Length: 492
Ligand code: UD1
Ligand code: CA
Image (cartoon, rainbow, N blue to C red; front, top):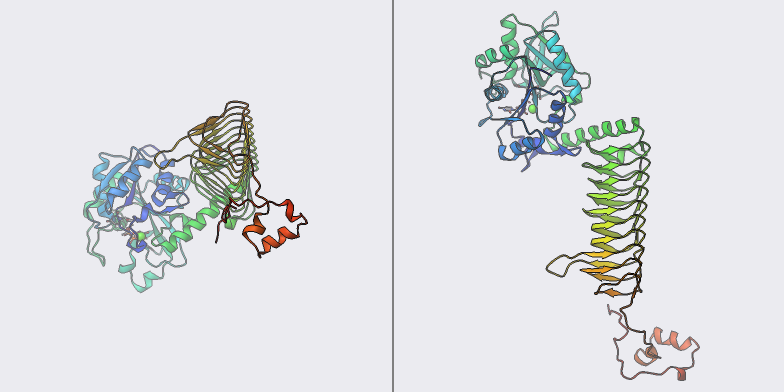
């Protein structure tokens, strides 16, 4: 909108959070609280956004700038009230015309469309001040909207300054106000701090406008939760649940199946394709994208992941992973950053991956760790394979070519490479490169030490079972050179 300045107030401390982190920086729905407010404000495309920072501004300022690079930051050293904060903001804003909207930084459910409608009504009515009000069941703590017998807005009275009668008023100031710039600049110096809190109240501008014979109006928002702030962690969780309910509902209306909305958590920036199915106990976080017809869950957490169309991800924890179309993951898989599974590939049960590029149709089906690796298309990695990427000092890469078939219980000691179409036998420890088409075998030929149990474990159930096996004892030669412990068992 042309000639529109938006001021976002975020200088107050938010002590009720009892946190090292400033209130407006607390995350909900995958963004900070102020991140949601800035998204709503930016949707109006104002000429400028001024954010007022104070308490812990070294945390808050850079966070705001990262989200809105052309934001103007105004520093309010001491929090002397909302009117004082706006005064500081107007000094930074420079010469302005038109409309100023003031909002707080802690209302995560606020939507751009509501702000736009409010600003449009304010401008159409050519008012000096407009108040976005709400009707609430419990108005405690809010500024009350005092109206004349004709229904015109007369004043906003703060909780601490209100009479008993005024405290019964359930119409409250949401904290979002719109001003005509010329009026605001005239009113600000007239606002004093002679009140219960000893603060400069922005809300006093209403009375100033009335006394000057200017128009004041209110716009009552029906969806009052949009203007609700979170002052403590209980309220934050309540707003978080409501935000999630709204996001999940929107996706269902857009063609996504969500089996259990109550246990499904979807962050604000997640994108879901048509006919995707989300099963219970699933969290889709950050910038996760799920393709059409994909099925995710149950009990899955995906943060900043890209899931291809028609892929299936079951009971998985993944971060910064890319899963190709039609690929399958899980159950019980742990995908760490840099995992990239190709089209139709598979990462199976109890598999951990990190920095691993796994080609189209390639499979790591069971019980493996794949770190710092590249696996070519169509290759199958045997059960229980460890990509040993760390020599205790540095990480190294392993490459496995296309259509290779590696045996179970292998260890690939990086840096090492296994060629296209190569294979490895069960139990192989690959320390040297395997050429294309070769079969690597590293364990020695098997040796059986006859009648070892009867000789070294006499009188045990093991020895008795061996004796009962029906094999004549004289066929079992005892090897005197092998002592107890050679079985390789671990004693517990
Ligand atoms: C304010 C309103 C009240 C309204 C309520 C809605 C005033 C005087 N009162 O009350 O009518 O119902 O919001 O939530 O405006 N801030 C600063 N600098 C300051 C003081 C506040 O940046 O010096 C910021 C706070 O960080 C917060 C916002 O302004 O984001 C509101 O301030 P707060 O002290 O919470 O005002 P309330 O008493 O809630
Ligand atoms: Ca407040």
